[in-house]
Image (tube, rainbow, N blue to C red; front, side, top):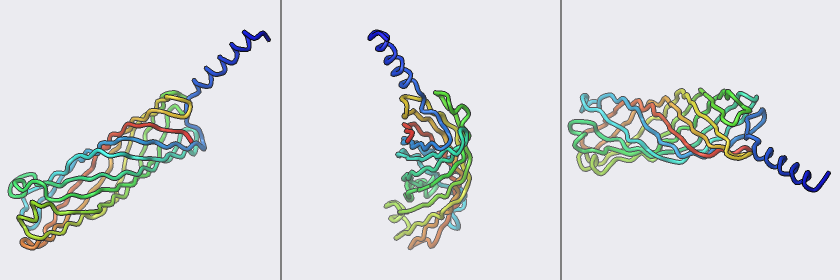
Length: 221
């Protein structure tokens, strides 16, 4: 083979290698690193017993997220996500609305989903998933405003167990790296209890049910 033909063959092999997709296949492990927006779709009951007509709202949060996906067949994988976000709880109207921020909490919702990947050998691979999550609330803290209004206050939010659904797509950037776009719906419901010096114990039930929008990079190990 002539030197020119040899160079052409090497170039063709290199181009083929670069074009190889980071496809999903049985036994593959993927790690994704995303930036996510956690946007609660909260529905609140009244603050009982003192303020039954007043409700609360929960703010959005932006945070990093890491997930690991293990493919058990070319089409089916299991994803476990880990992320934590901080949220503020504020009064929506009336007395608590005038106070504004009532409390803050950190949320840790580990979520396991089973995914179906529609085109495992393509360069653009959409998927859907469904599963379960267990949400833990920690570092609950009363705001300065509620302490000024109601005296010394302790806050506790009850952990939650619920379901989750997701849809997303992986888009190849390099042989073992891809862009990931993902959205999840997570079923989260909690009861917040505020034990105050002046008003006694107040509680409010809140369905958070956030949408989680994520964009990031994935890597095939």
